[in-house]
Image 1 (cartoon, rainbow, N blue to C red):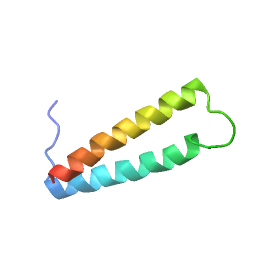
Image 2: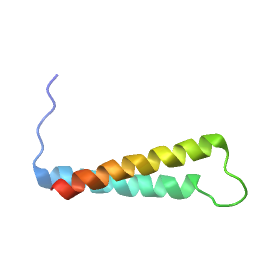
Image 3: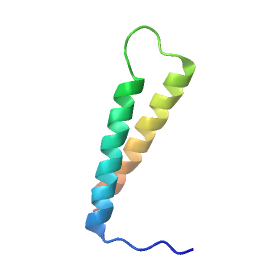
Length: 61
């Protein structure tokens, strides 16, 4: 199935919304109280990596 093409402004808005969502998730996971578990560390690393990719994509627009 072919996905509908979006114009660059709507893609940019989508990426910004996704970045905001990931920022909120990061705040929930990264509590800074006590020790983080291994799963929390992996989740935090994955969220930060995804946010980095989003920032790179936003720079292209």
